[in-house]
Length: 478
Image (tube, rainbow, N blue to C red; front, side):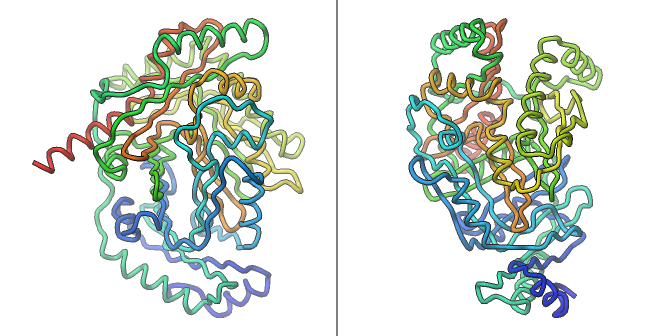
């Protein structure tokens, strides 16, 4: 049987739940991009989160039932989001995927203006919302480890929905997905040489180097230990963001990828980094700090990994940021529960390797997912330490608002769980232009010129995907 029995459905109703997930499992894992194209023919009605082959779950969401969007003025955006989600109560079905429907969207970095008292100097030229979440009734989850997929529809009792309608929807979803057979394309081996795109950077090389020197003055005066400075690269976009996403997932698969399509702008993300994940009362984060390119073979990989993990500067910066994340979790977790369960391990991705740690704790009684966001957002690895003072310096020195860059993309479940990434390695497309931003952590012994080129290098994967997509677009028109 696909769906839920009358008895189980009524039991959930009797226990006070008003959103009831109906789940069917299929022991096959079609390509996520094909699922998205099949179930979201109008891309504005759906969203996609992808973990790549190394991850556990990827999601396609569709059938929007509510939306919350906030801009710079007005009520605290997190309060607005919390009020929207508070109207629904859903059970936690442990036999299914982590996310079983709810809100999917993003927090802009500039949400910090509501969380802390911040200066307001940088130019806001993209005018993106500081919070945008759409609530979806239905979703499909791919389990990459089991090579299976879950079809999920939620019965929203307060909207005159019931178990019979839900079971019918689930059967139609199953009939539809049975037409798909193709697995995901294997990652493509593409050398990330410098992109040939003509870009307009937000910082000139000279301006960036002057900003680095200013940061080092602040470090010497004791204001901060490290500040992340970033450069945005702008360019005309002559292909569709969806084509860029399909290219990016082949050449640079990452644990926290996303494709979000809104009427006025689109988002293509290949982030490797988690901000926070909340499952029940367990709150966790995985700070990344320290990067090297992948080697040409296994021997070179091991040499580069050893060089990275033994580098005193990289180790010191990583430990500083782990301490920052421990402090952030400590603001909302039970006293004594915050612990580092993995410290400074090497994780390898398609083109780079990183030093990664894992920090977790138990959410304190009376604290919610939204308290956790407020305590941990934005991630310390992309601001610096101490966090508030570094954000003030970023606002002073960077010429344009960060917008989505170093904000978060992810999901919030009807059951109160959540998972949010840190937005790096990301394209924002708007009005025929593409915008890709990347940064470098500035410390006292940083070399200004080297940090400028590191910032540009970190954008290479996304820019390469744009270049390849645009070249393919030209060929298809010939």
